[in-house]
Image (cartoon, rainbow, N blue to C red; front, top):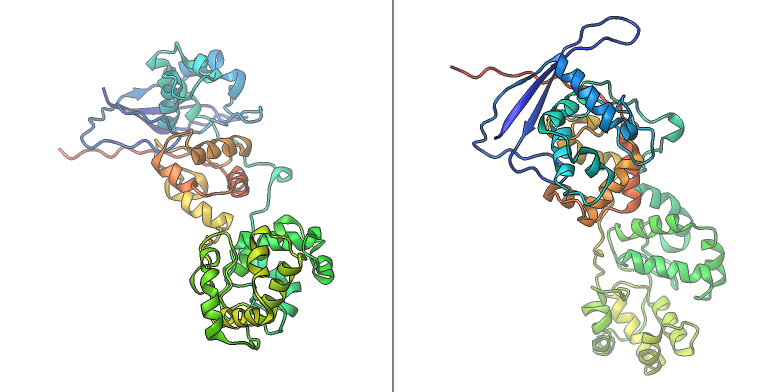
Length: 413
């Protein structure tokens, strides 16, 4: 039978007597989800009110001592890595999660056995007990991770050493220097990596990129991928019309007009001298990409020059790339359900402020993978990288957790 429990809790403050009343609401719904996400009320649910007395809270403490404290501590502030804090957690969420574990919908885990034989009354009382406790403090300063900076700004800073040859935004003004805009970020990262490893021979490039970390390379390629593309501002000798005819053989990999939709690089707007040099390198074997050896070998110098002129004249298009969000931008989205700074005001939605990062990370990865089911959470985490999950987990671990008082509104007669 659907119902809600309104618990009024009293306790003594540390070091002094203080009378505190906490109103918590526990919604027990007929269709509990296995997801650690907001429980969705069904229109027409008849939620009946009941009260948890101070004795009920005391009984909940006994349940906690017997079944929960070995992992979560009697204080609800877990010390073990990967174990969540549950002190001050929203009671409806606690109750719903206990029911999920009791039903075995989270696989085989110690939690299943801990709650397997607890009565519904015991689940209500232990949820109310832990909800009544002061929440965990934010993560210690030594454990904090700085929020990730804007990725485009980071890429721009890292790319400053490239601007002298490739232009401030990756549009070349120097003959022989390639345009870097309009290129897929993964392709460009691979090309930089080839220079770094020596697979592509270019003494100056190897020197310039040898000190770049993988993270810096990824930031640089993201920066260029997000810039407005434009043609190289360099001369292009050759017959564009003849080049257009020859380019029909290139379209299968590099796209119509040199705008690639696959893994091959886009050629539209590319500097003509650089393009011609690359084709000569494929012909001589200085560049060893197998797919390019035969096409390059079939072209004479005039055909290469014509192709270069044609592609240089084509308008490049922005590659399909998703701009990563900053940690604060991700948090803004999370806060829509989980409350400001992770302090949920919905009794059925978990508070995540001051939660252990080493607990949040695997939970978020489980939602991303689909092992935990929630339409909202699965969609929110789709495409999010491990680094972004680590950042947002650390962000919430250092937020101040706050208790919430739920005030019942009398119904009109």
